[in-house]
Image 1 (cartoon, one colour):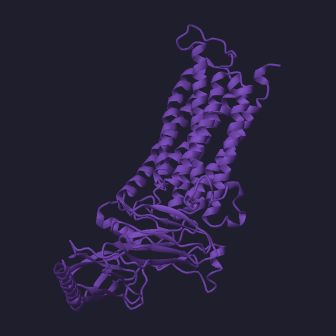
Image 2 (spheres, each protein chain N blue to C red):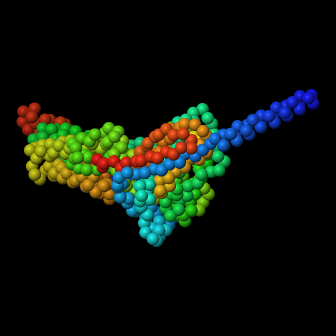
Image 3 (cartoon, rainbow over the protein chains, first blue to last red):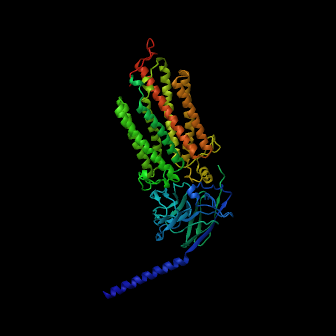
Length: 241
Length: 351
């Protein structure tokens, strides 16, 4: 009896060591995928948001504009959702305990484009002294559409989705210019390009993947890339029909 | 005093209700034009409040339009109930009483559809809601019309029988097409995809635009609108084009009806005047349709387009009903074209 218990403990310890070693090897071999999203051509001119009186007061410096093609002026394109599309089949990933947050501030959503893992919690805040409604409009079957009221500075509304969807739209119908877009994927390997177009997908396990860059107006581009490598994408402004 | 000459206050009340329903359709149109249909996410409450107690201070943005629409709809509900009760007590014709009660059913169904469109988050219910609004408008107008002095005192003129019968068919066909056109328009509006084709008279510079994926991608990339509409699909383009074709068909059929009225009736005849009005409003309506496209669907013009559409339908329905009445009376008193001698026109018992 005592001998069997000792044997069990030894086996458990060995399993733990193997797991730790495996994780360590993986961590050592994991690498980032970095790159830059570039926009070629002259995008259409952004339009001023038609803020009402209440929202207008929150922007004394002037009305903000639409955010279809946000750029640093040097060709970098922001708000592109980049994620691993292929190469992770059969693997499962722990759902992050930490919720992602979208805030409604100044009658705009921030961030405008973000990412979320399936089943991870998404918290929608209302930092305004105004009433908003949060209308999630997924189109992938299994992701439920919802429309909820959110009073000023009230409790966050929490969402979670079971299926991958790129990109899911959140909107406010009280202020019909308010939109946020969330890329929902079933793993943690995604990123959103910054204003200069750069992005980084962190801690990607060693291997070769297909990554996709999705821009709401630019469309989608894919390329094969190994963990640790660089992937640059160039979207083109198409000729207006 | 001849009962047919007495003022029918219930019918006048119904006529007043028609004006209110038109106003409600206008507000409803504004709700869709402003993209505010979902600005109040709960129903029948408003942000958890009893809808009549929702603080005015909170009526801002899209809430203003949607909440006003709900309150105005409630007023129409009450007016309809009053009308139905009034008819039950004052109207001698059983079928008119039944029309009053049916109006209550329609308004209740309409309210329910509007509520379910919000709570079930179904755009398609918005299309039914819009179509039923038009049916309800015409229904109340018919109640007003059958209670009018004209309905009760009109005399069948046997010499106009053939012209009336021919015009009735034209009116009926054109009215059906107007209603189909309104449904197409409502389907387009409730897709929330904005203008799928932004130019007129051509469509993306062509007679009929392509709908292949490459072309649709180009369209979507170049669409910059603060309302950030849903991406355009081939379905949106096709339904938009069907609405344009529908407009030509409606215009042609109403023009045909007008020509028939012109050849069959004297210039002072009410049906001739009605046909003139109908053709005029249809032409104006086509103009509003063009302005809607040229000015990128501004809420006020798009809403007037909805209202003018309702008036087009209403005119068609009332004209068809009047013609049905005339041909019915002429049939009762004999068709002069088949009789040996024309009969003397006479006042018919109210039916």
